Image (cartoon, rainbow, N blue to C red):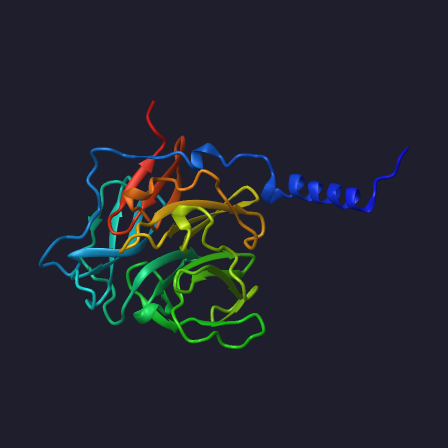
Length: 307
């Protein structure tokens, strides 16, 4: 039997890696995670209008399906660019009809926007942007009373402080007592840092784990919004944009990974058309499938298309 040449052997190895690597497997993305249509004729959660502290809502709000009900922590402001971004809270029995809390705003001492909330061991952890897109941490025993712990100390892989600049859209995931923080810098890529004490965060690598492009919907800008795990696969809900419009038209996309570092984007992205300008997406299981929320600058729910 004729032995393969070195070039042929290397080609076979490369073919095996591509075909059998979990990130490049031929398995499709689950249809329940990618096929969505807006739920029609529902009141959408929006800003309360002129004269209210939350005349408008901004950036990502954090949705949790906690027990029998739904919760959202959102950013409200007066609608002006310099207006202080404050923390609001609303609840819903079904995740569709929302009632604002009478205690609002829950937190007004510092700028709080683009929030991610993780409940872990009876404590709520809020990762959020602060003034000048500086990532910060707040904690709460009940989701209502929040204490600011300060700006996150994120460092390069070798432990040196990151260069000064924005560190935005912080998205957290905890597993095996290790916290994972996904963040963007000027929306030019998504980086990953980890921590075991919530005090010092260290990059797992100094290159982005998820970058813009090559498709139009996320060609130039990208940011992470949520991590969820189904079986042994992690899914990331992110949004991206091209610089063809001002302001940019954002679109929601989905990616998957087995190690939180190497990501494969869904080939059918975006999950909704670019023209809809829907971002800050989050996915939640419901009976019969999943529900997709887009949050900026209004909360809209999407489910599987009706036959």
